[in-house]
Image (cartoon, rainbow, N blue to C red; front, top):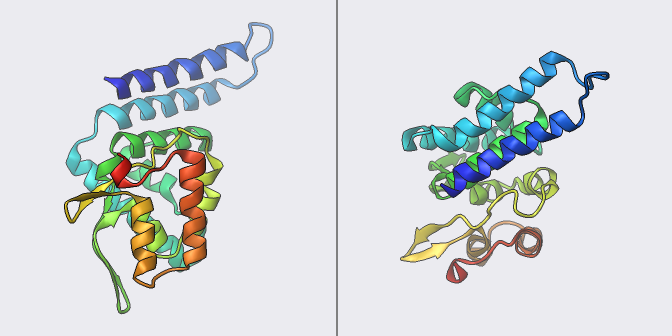
Length: 206
């Protein structure tokens, strides 16, 4: 119920903004732009209310595959918008897409699990998207996408049960560094920003 209430609030806010910037004497955006906005808002409502667990699993796998592809192509941000257009029929502009993706990540936060992935001799286990991004060295995705958001836009306290304990991305960072993997300084910079600016916590604090 809380998720639906938040989504309805987003819808009302967008529609109120559209009315506030339009008058009978001066139309601030063409009708096709209004249609695009309504389509985007409709997509936002759908992503929080009409997706099955099986769909979530498949979409999560696709988002993770986007991360791997972006890494191989030297891109900072994976082509997530294209994936959501193809998989969930998203329609809307970039700003609306951010709300759409954030809503998806928040609504299904503990289910966004990447499947096992092998590249060359390296094997990445099944793990949450937030961890996979860092595991493959796509720290720039946090810098260029996630850290451009406002506090509260995404809940970074998604967790997996590992050895009977809740493991968040903050826990994972320290575990990854302890294994001698990744750039410790860069990883801790990301973890610090997540905790300081976005309220991320360790599993023990959840």
